[in-house]
Image 1 (cartoon, chains in turn brown, purple):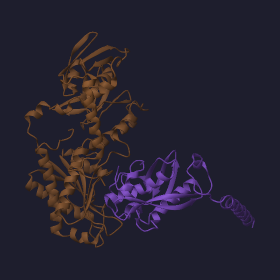
Image 2 (tube, rainbow over the protein chains, first blue to last red; image 1 turned 90 degrees about the horizontal axis):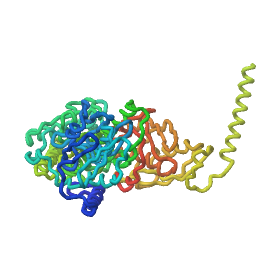
Image 3 (tube, rainbow over the protein chains, first blue to last red; image 1 turned 45 degrees about the vertical axis):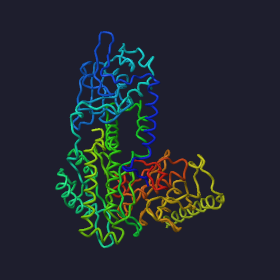
Image 4 (cartoon, rainbow over the protein chains, first blue to last red; image 1 turned 135 degrees about the vertical axis):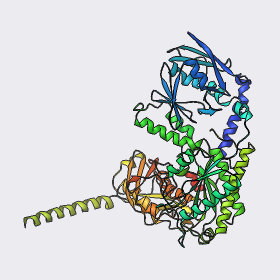
Length: 420
Length: 190
């Protein structure tokens, strides 16, 4: 079981912070100016101008204007094709991957939406721009200048690509505040999607006296919906409102289409031993055994057999699906801890902890998401309690308080909204 | 009359062939002490016996827990299939709890290039008690047991009734091949 700090930050993140700290310490030695440039000058044969920076990233709009690029976004808003004189490339939202000529290239960070505009990591200037413009590009971070040459002259010569990656990833990210955010008050929750597990032919777990998980979780979800609407004044959407079957991907899609700020899947627990009772809360792990970084490394420069074909599309789908929840893991971990804390504090039952697990219903959710197991109906005592109105009300109240905790955390700025 | 003679001849030949095979399999060599996996074992046909660590649940239902058992098979894949069947039989020693319903059938098992496909009967879905972590332990009792005991297996794809399935019983993603999660012995995902 993962030992939880206040908000259950996973151990791996401690290591990431240590790495970040060491890189930051090394920066002055690397001669990178502490003053954040606002512009990057570019020049080359027959061309000159400047690009706007969005914090430590380059603003896509200025890039398109400067080089006469055209773009099209797909309907779902999660990928964008950019076309220039030299060629085209595809960007994936919230992903560090760019795809051009059937090859994946990994940027130093994800493509992000900042204050309504898209921003790209600086290494896009040398990794993506040459394909679009048909010109090679050499970036000098110290002088904030981009030298463009004829195709064929070597990019990166005289400039260590690792420096560029470090520059793009780490300079003063913490000091960057998008203009809009300076004016804007922190926002709390406005839409919450609750997902009563199972339904219809999927009955879920079954108690020894006949309690069905699908009925129980719907009842608790309805109670929680009322509490949230009355107490927090948020819009609440249930993924099912009666006893019918809803697919797992459909549940996530309901949350995505409603632009939910939170997604909470509510389940009742069961196991082979009747003695086991208590509460458990889950959030998603990284897919499979592979760390995201490892997967990108594998994909980098991997030639795809059929350019633009079905294989490529399928791979893109898989990547987008993976990326969705991965961007919100820190928030999801906080949410899961808040839910578990409130349950074990308010309701009779053991604390079986917060864990990461490869749960299909959480994959693809583009918002912080958790799955709570509100008690074991395979335990005869807890089954009896779960059938009582008062016990269900206590559980709904605890989940309400956890969501309120999260809401307050957002308002106080203690919880970041994630990459959206 | 003539048909009868032909049938009799076929039966005798078949019986002789079976006897010969049986002698080769069971009389040929005594099973030696369990030895570490060699690459050559993969290709080896014929009977095999191995000591394997089976991954069951512990009494808390939070962790996987090992039980050592000797398993035999008439071929490599047969051995692997029997290993999964031993998991379904459940633990023999106290302190461990089954991870799969006892009514589950192993319909088929294939091993190609480091990946094992295990095709389980629908009881694995229909008779599973439910619960997210109970399902995690069910899936990874199979995956860990195969990957951790056999050096040439890297990943396991679970099929239900011959098809890929989104989950085992509604929670855990089994849509692709899975690698072992050894930290489940400590109750952690990683």
